[in-house]
Amino acid sequence: MRYSDSYNKDFYGDALIGFHQFGPDRKILSINDYELTLTGYSREEVVGKKSWADLIIPQHRERFEKHWAGISNGEDIHNFEYTLVRKDGSFVDVMLNATANFDTDGTLLNTQGIVVDISSRKQYERELSEKEESARQLSSALKVKKRRQQLAISILEELNGFNCDESDLILKILDQIQSVGEYETASIRLRNNSDDGELFTTISKDARISSRCLSGSSACNSSCGKLTAAKELFEYPRTVWVNSKEDAVNSDYSVYSMIFCCQNQGFNSIALIPLWVAGEPFGFLQIADTRQGKFNAEAISFLEGMVSSIGIALSRIRNRAQLAESNRMLSDKNRQLDTLIEKLHAANEQKTEFLSMVAHEVRNPLAGIIGFAQTLRSSGENISDSEREKFLAVIESEGRRMTSLIEELLDVTKIENGIIKMEHACFNLKAIVDEAAETVRVGNNSVISIVNRAGESFVHGDKNRIKQVLLNLLVNAAKHGGDGKEITVSVEEDDGYLKVGIKDQGPGISGENLSRVFNKFFQIKGSSSAKSKGSGLGLSIAKEIVSAHGGTIRVESSVGEGATFNFTVPVCGEEVEKREESPSL
Image (cartoon, rainbow, N blue to C red; front, side, top):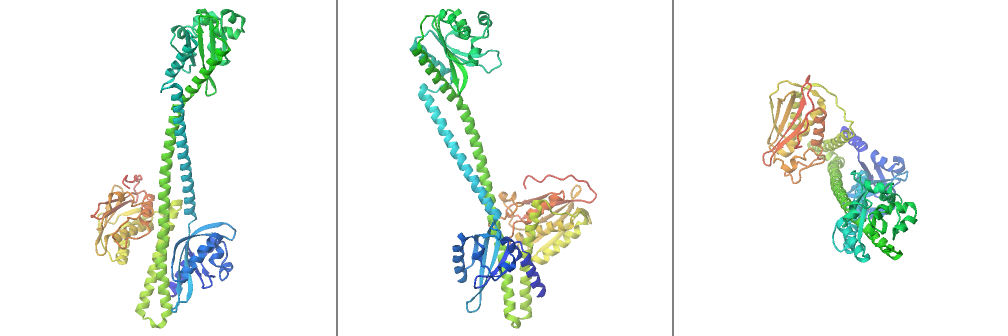
């Protein structure tokens, strides 16, 4: 009894979750070290002095009043969230589970509570909310982009009357220009970005304009004696026009050089108007006519307006490809965010289920320990030795169950942080198999047979960790196999390794669950075994330990035929490369 009280006290004080007791006056009667760490106060500052309402944010005090009223009437508190205000003013999110104890006449004696730090989960929720908001914003931006794209296409179609590419659009507008102005020739010269040696690309129905005038040919260059007009116009974009050869001769040299070649082809009236696309000089409109006096200020203004329309339309046509690419990229990002959100949702649900499981798994044994302890205390000499021994056995069993859960949580934390220690040495694997089998055989009323095909073979690894793997797999087999059903353990050589197989006669594992059995916190839903409830960490820990030894672990199963778990450990003195895990895991 003294040992059990001491063990319970040590566990209560050293637990990784908070425990406290409140008196009928709501003041704290007792509180463990972990919960003190959450609050930031010392025990002397809170015991007998502060209530739960003093430790939480003001917004949650009304909630506490409702909960206190309920618990005073015999109701339990399950998984309610509070925000603690630490002594230094910072905040900690916690989950509270609590129950009350009453004397025989119904008077409230005290309340007992379990506090779990859920700050990480709340942080995940905040991050998830931010990701969802980001996804909503991106989705909204995508819709705006689509609307803008549709508007651009609509305006372009209205402007030009039909869907078209660049050449179709330009030819349509050139037809309008020639028709309205009654010009003999009209062409558009676009800056050429290819490496074919030409300065520009010409779009025109007039062969003379396309092949000769301002073409950049050697004939034109020799006639001008200078660089082509196109190059100069790109460098100094501006509108120039003449109505006769005399106008050109009497103009400045730059205008003369830009129109001289065309006049050598028999044209008198010539106009060159820059074409701007997206704020950059992109080409120019060239109008040529053999007749004199074809241009005036009003005609040039009309031509500049038409060129502006060409620039706007060209910009929108060229934006189609960019908009389509932007649309594709936004769609890809949206899909990536959807995938991320799904993963965050899954992680959040997994964390929530895990915290609920921890609270449940801790509360049940704790309630049993407290209940039997109170019975022992209140019954005194009226209880028989056999009943006392039975109660103490239950207290010890429930305490060990809580300790096992906490040890699994600590192992997972160490594995995730890469600080789990392995003390490798050569040891007799058969002896460890016998020890683990005997432990499970006694503790679970299981029938275990061992088939050793490897003799007294020694392996290299951490003896205690390999025994932990064996215990996890055997306990798992006992849970799912059912009472009285045989579990078979086999040991055999496997190319420099010893392979251990553990086969049960349980209900088996479906294909959809087979690849997830080694995931942290995973438990098969709807299991018919009453004893299958656990932390969902045992197989995950076993996998990490085996991998750390350079071995592999696999499971083979089908529904109705039980399951077989196989893992390997390197034999002493053999250099064996670490194998890749099966793709099915």
